[in-house]
Length: 292
Length: 176
Image (cartoon, rainbow over all chains, first blue to last red; front, side, top):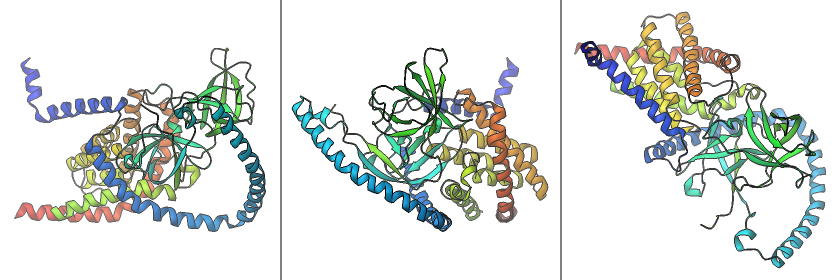
């Protein structure tokens, strides 16, 4: 016993043990779900975010300039392609407007509450990326919109190509985006699975995009019914069921469909639509406020 | 001494900003998901070898915490712990103020591997990663070590000069 006391009278060892315990406490504490950040965290994030903002934009500009010079050749080709798409778009837009008007007319006839009517009026806000970390176990980036601009945790973040991630922490002027690459069903703090469906078979297909496979770089969609018509090459979008993710966000394309773990369901391997690198701007999807 | 110490902290802060905001643009896209550059940690290793391990420990804890808070995706404290402890351990073993460049580079490789391994360990304790250690080693740790090696060569002269100044002033102060 005396020896033990002697051991503890060693100041350095004592400090070491205290710090170790402190660290474990902090890690365990921060692992759970948290609604908001404490003020020191807010302060540190906002001040650093401001400085990062000063650096990221010029760096992106210079890098973008070189990229543009490199891409000059492909531009003509891309232009051609875009022109065709634009023509198709104008044709379809007229049709879309007609259908939308019809739809609204029917909705008015149908007895809906105000909340149900505005449920799908999403707003898209541009956010500047401020900095990012590519660490495999904690792949996140910081954007320059915060709670002052109305950002809340769990909002979806998309790039022009597709779903990128969701907001994990919000401070006053910046917020952190957790990328889809960190999706993991065994992590208690992870993004919840996305209820997904497939373009063209919206009322027949349903599954949950559950996790990201680091080794292959693919998303895994599970719980698909055995009789589901999902096949290779389908474009997977979020279905909006469950409420957390807005509907109609592109997730990726189906690469292969396999029999699931227990043989009763199917599992699809999805190639993500968004590439997880080099962002300048992202869009945050603001869903309409739900009446409390 | 105060002036130089604050220069050192400012330099570290600048490097921290650079590694989040500028390096992603420089690294080629195909390598981006495999390399996790950590400029702050490289300088910390210089400090722990050429200056003192306690300074490196404190700086590691604080800058790791900064990284944790800014990129708060899962847990707070992982980087703080990994950077502080690995810098301290490296200092405990290799603290030699006259270490030549080749030795320093070896220490750098060792240190970056140690830090990544500690991080991996923390994440596995909390069950936050599914990949086996082998895979992480081949796909993330080794490329990161190589990049750290290159960046370490770049930073060697300016950082060492800065530390030399810091040491001279510390000596003067002790004599006075």
